Image 1 (spheres, rainbow, N blue to C red):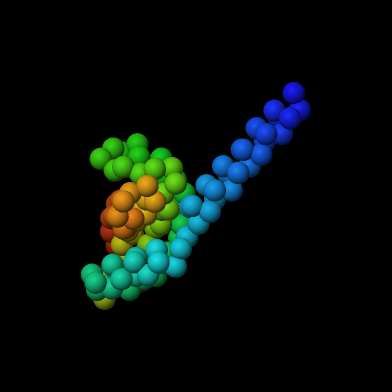
Image 2: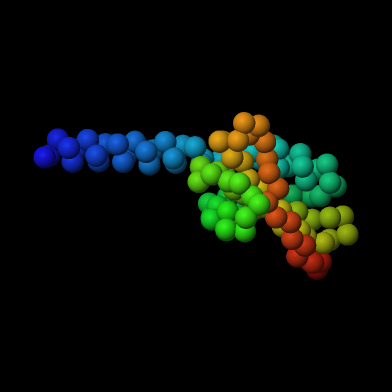
Length: 110
């Protein structure tokens, strides 16, 4: 009985460890997001990791696994308009490239 419990606990801890490693931000993620913003003429204000993949999954049309790395990039155009771009990197996707999940314009900042 106790051996079964220990085995179950060890498997659970192993799964949690592997999940936390897979959702950890990678330097290549930040480089890809900055390159995307730069290609659109935007200046990056901030990048924050967001682990709420359910928000995008519930909207449909977006296929993300629960191991996806999700980021919110706040960028500014030369005229001062801020926009929020939500990116996703899904390790279960063969390409592993960034996906644009949502874009919002926040308005001009003074």
